[in-house]
Image 1 (tube, rainbow, N blue to C red):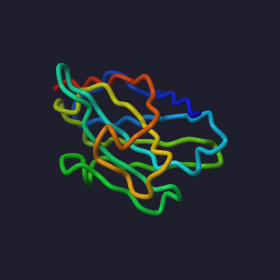
Image 2 (image 1 turned 90 degrees about the vertical axis):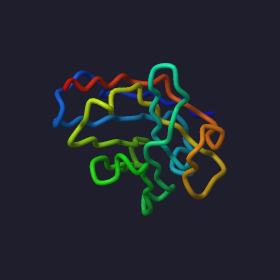
Image 3 (image 1 turned 180 degrees about the horizontal axis):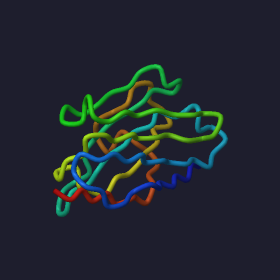
Image 4 (image 1 turned 60 degrees about the vertical axis):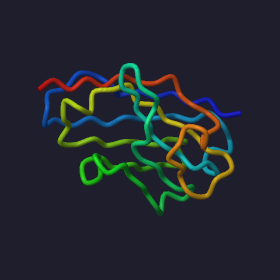
Length: 125
């Protein structure tokens, strides 16, 4: 069982930065591939970034590559999403997710087994 809790979402102006955090509760956190997704109003959640168990490999959706950085600290059961050069179109609810079986971050919701409750990011233009 893994419980995930996101934090760090707030309102920010375009061009600004935010760091989202996700805390995992399980003792096997380090064994999970982790991902960040976001959800726009009326839409399905979409992949933003993913990171392998060790943190050695990271993956990004095209629109955030070069602006967002995913990282993790397994000693603290934490995964982060550093978001720079934020745009109005980044406004969404952001979720972290854990894949207990995969080796490479999947890009679909069904690839993940556990989800946090989400944290809202609002970027004003």
